[in-house]
Length: 183
Ligand SMILES: [Zn+2]
Image 1 (cartoon, rainbow, N blue to C red):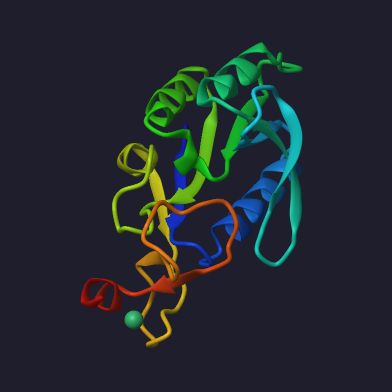
Image 2 (image 1 turned 60 degrees about the vertical axis):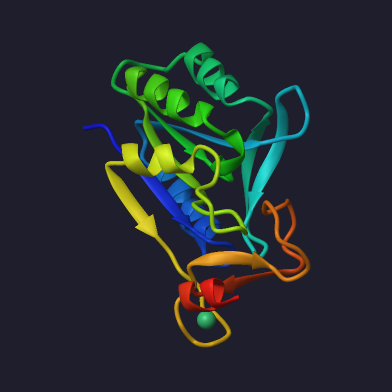
């Protein structure tokens, strides 16, 4: 059975921590071959890591363009036909609309796909390729943090200015839907 699993929500809700747990679980399965990708600002493949807010790291391959994920996984031969490729993608919102294509191609290749990313930008708008990923998912985890008012968070707001969520965590806070729309 093929799975397209999506882990989503705002910043600080534990998406990367859950992704890392799933990576470690998959790595223990002998017939799984696992791959971890994240977006980079560089044009080439580079060694990188997926780091959670509490500092836990997993090795990852940084790619500039979503289709590089497909090419990388396609070129890598499995030891035997019984093996299965499981592809993890962190910060997937930055892969933009191409993510839809990437998911389709990976599933055609027989991969399980686990995607983590922000569902909304700091203006409360659906973010990059994540709306497609959520629609295509066979399983969705929508995680929350706490707004300062105590409600579960809905979006990540930028305390300094309104805009797209940038790399780095400074100045962002989890905000509930009530506080967000009252502002
Ligand atoms: Zn609130």
